[in-house]
Image (cartoon, rainbow, N blue to C red):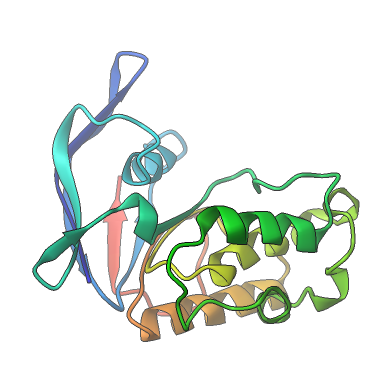
Length: 201
């Protein structure tokens, strides 16, 4: 698996936010995107996820010599958790598992397994809206685990997490890279594991 970004530029409201960015990542690598507020970290992730149009450049994801569909191989976690307040944690994760599901993959976790990894097993049937901010973030992170996708795009994933939860997330990211996944993280904070690359905007 290899992600290749070449000459990428993105404009928002007529202003160029990302200008001629390029990098390559292969399986097992993590990239931290850093920079001041407004530097374009979230814009870059949204463009990579296909949620913002690019003004120029190429984004490609390859498995061997074949290019694969980027959207179907990518998890994008933004600032918002993307969960329904009135539904239980289990119901939310069931929705995402069904919505995101492609061919079954041996690295996909069951909902109880995913919640165990993020330390939230006890909240399986709790209404999402009743959770604390940190618990909501952990439930959203469990989405990454219930359907395996090799490329993770994470925007400030440590937000609202306590030290124990950050350690759990760091372990999940280490495991994902060890299994050949690729991670791009926009963050101001240390991730808790050695990253292989850094991109300063």
